[in-house]
Image (cartoon, rainbow, N blue to C red):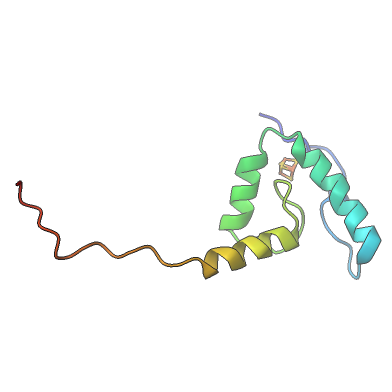
Length: 91
Ligand code: SF4
């Protein structure tokens, strides 16, 4: 499996200092387009989320996309604790 970004200029994926607005959106859109055809996209996105990568486009996710996912995950209700009083004997 070869990453679609292999050999490309990494500046497509990372914001130069102070980049904002239209310039940022255009660059991120170009990076997302490259990622959309990458066979490693899911792995790349999962890695970025699990290692909390702060910068760049990874797996088609921008910095803002990852931040939103982190926020929504942390706002999700905690899983229910195991039922300690459940009768495990056969009936
Ligand atoms: S998904 Fe990851 S490995 Fe693939 S092109 Fe995008 S940044 Fe590169």
